[in-house]
View 1 (cartoon, rainbow, N blue to C red):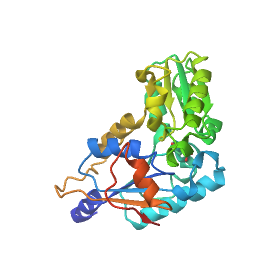
View 2 (cartoon, protein in one colour):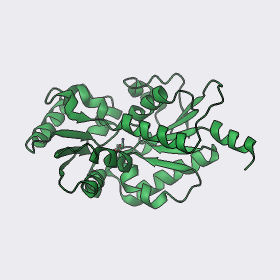
View 3 (tube, protein in one colour):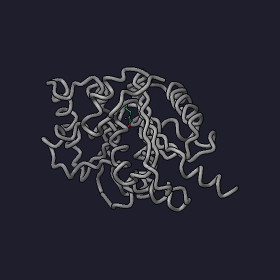
Length: 268
Ligand code: DGL
């Protein structure tokens, strides 16, 4: 490969995707830790919530978005969505010639090294049914006890601007009650939407009991891109683009807690 080609690859954008604003909990950390990278974020609002979809449907969503990123000539894609990572990643990981980073597998491995005895996992129904966190946590540390609780409605509360409703509060309270019966030392927020609920969750347990995998995920990506010599070192001001499959106004409004999206995303 010619030097100019390598240079072009380094300057290429990195794609991020999720069913909606959840992936911004990862994206916002990424922009702080790797501010020089060009980025594209895709929110699949038309198909949210992903957590109640079948494997076939989730594969379809992932492939459509990855093909979109292929057209954008990205150098890597970050699956900022646990459901897609848990259900679709293994099947699609070799279908593209750019690097794909799945949040669940990456972070479960890192968390397994923290020697936590009793871990709780809150995630979508699809992620919980796949036992993606549990499998990896116990693969690297067979002694770890893992209790998993699906939270089927939490993504919709966030995407529909319902965080401050009694319905949302009561649901979070109920799931926390069930979770605390298992005496977890730590609770993984195994869906990238759930950090949006941290203020409510922390009314029932100390904030430091919750693990938001976003930061460790971004640190891993940074290390890997550095090792692959793929970091953008051009010194030019970075670019960012946002796309959604529906509801751009809702996306911008709900994004605010984690990221200020300055221009209305295009619908693709
Ligand atoms: N935020 C995603 C996840 O991490 C998807 C949630 C959903 O759409 O149900 O699983």
